[in-house]
Length: 300
Image (cartoon, rainbow, N blue to C red; front, side, top):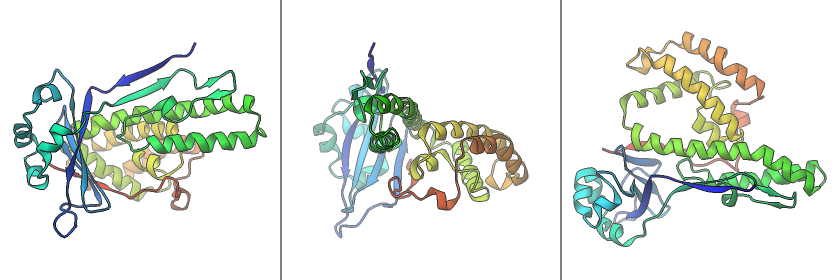
């Protein structure tokens, strides 16, 4: 039996526009992901090549104090209350909000990708995901490269290649779909939290001190070809380590590197070795997955 379902996110979105200044220069830092985290809703801005930014506002459709239904056309009170510092940067925000379409966000999951070993679903048809890890297109490309690799291995025997492709790639598609949803909640709820930001600083410290054993989940997904499912599993182990290291500290300077090394070697290294994951600098370069490294800028 073939079952395909779409899991809709509780939030919809609209795109707005932040123009370049008169000199066609960026009004705010261009090498950053700008986030206005507000709990049930948020706004984010990403730079374009011409000095402008594409701004996206995400809010629940209904049944929330701040939602597309409750705001309706009362846009100015929403921005005055929630995104006041963005108003001078976005002269057309009211027009954009009223006139631009309201989009939906969902995750597509298919119970099977292959039919009678002769038809295969790939890309969004099999596993559309929400955009919060920036991996939807990459995941589709990986479908293509992995299928081609398998076809070469089995000498282009399609009946043998397609089931093998499904077994290999389906867990990875499920993993990146789940991680993209997790990133939605992280950006919406947590990036303005002091304890969360402390964890990120500790995470960066571990990456610096133990480069052959520790790379953040974001780094593994974005800058390597480590399978998504393995990056997800490694990320869960990293979360456990970070929780232990951050439990009784208020500053990254208080982290015990001796304890950090013990935890990394005891809890993460066995997983790295078991799956033969290479995290050395020379192993991480992959032009197919490299992208501009952008630090989040939190706006309040």
